[in-house]
Amino acid sequence: MGVEIQIFYKVDLADDFNPLEAEIALMKSFKAAGWLIVSSQHHTTDPDTNQVTKTIYVTKNEMI
Image (cartoon, rainbow, N blue to C red):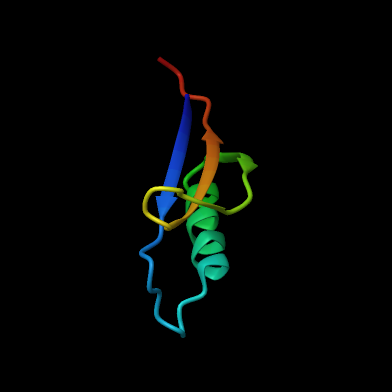
């Protein structure tokens, strides 16, 4: 299985919120659940909303 995760941050983030720390915590949660982080793309800015975005790709082997 492969999943693309897209994160859209709100425009005015709180000063004490660190997106990188939140993304690392999210990826650690996926890893603990047996997922493999395939790719973590760089941050981009959505041209329509000016939101910072992040895309992460994960995969997991499952018996069916």
